[in-house]
Length: 209
Image (cartoon, rainbow, N blue to C red; front, side, top):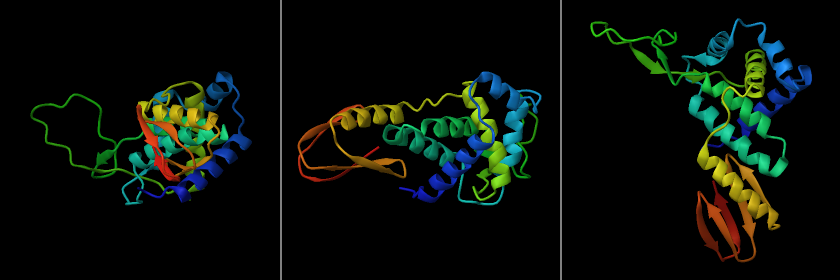
């Protein structure tokens, strides 16, 4: 399991600074933010320019997917992280997993049978320490989220969050680390995990995600 602790804290800081600098209460605010771009496609292209690099940063679109799921799950505990999950999910949805060898986007057009194959390489996501780029990216992601362009839709993560909500209502305490809940149990209870029930009997720390 990848340790996401550092990325989580940096992303939360980026989101808070963005929300403080540019409050966004409704679709009118979101559309005002996006006015600087010609359309949604242009905003998506801007996210590519801001965040995609050829240098191996250790972060890919899959890292953003994992972080988005983490924040969605964290919302069960803090009731404040879902907007981060939604903004990040909208950013992720606009980014490719691979690019051309020169770093450009792979053209989204029909491929001619006689055309040579396009060399592809993995796309990496810029470090969160690049605050200028990430602040603009987060602003776009927040606006797209308010407009519900790419709603968070990971069914498994949603099922786990629902199970955690039920466990929380039963009075059990737990934390979240790198996209997984850690529950210290001292009694017998039934835990719904990925849509299935699991009986936990021995007092211990249970991890479910």
